[in-house]
Length: 205
Image 1 (cartoon, helix red, strand yellow):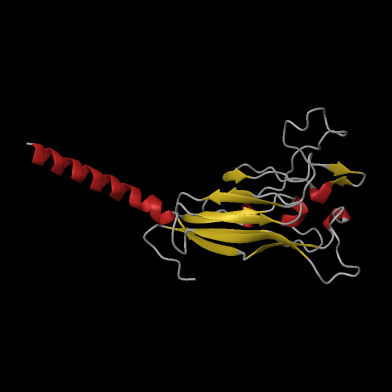
Image 2 (cartoon, helix red, strand yellow; image 1 turned 90 degrees about the horizontal axis):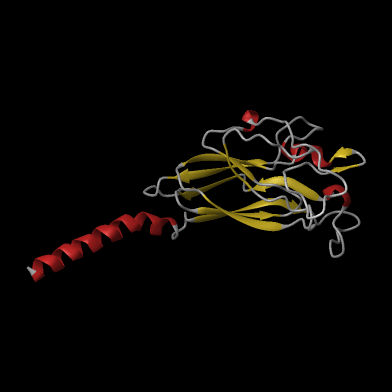
């Protein structure tokens, strides 16, 4: 009886390890993680950018792109978004395309900022109106929205690590309206995709 009990316990342990294996696979291997540069600063400007004491007005010198534009991971893996500039990271569900995103924005932020900081999403403004066109507020299919990095306390750069649990192709944009849709060209500019494979598929890119 004792031998049978030990045998049953061994089987249960093996089953448990089998169930845990997919999660472990997602945390290891070449498809477990990807890195995306979310904006970048130029080095060919005259005079050169010097951000030691302050950032350039209006983010001049920042390239509004996701690099690379498409990354591939396995389900359960993560993407490191390295944010360089005053960008906001929203992610939309499988199958969403740039043209599906509504262009309405969050209401203007009160000025001056209320004591204790902002308690609701809002679009910062200056004398020219909403900064960078405002912050897009389309929640349809949105599965994640990251922090706004330059409203109290002020900072432009940061890192967000986001896990993708399920297979699919996910749209990632910058929620600054004029970064996402270039007002001068009318073209979608700052967007990309995360392709998430089932855990038994390998990234062939």
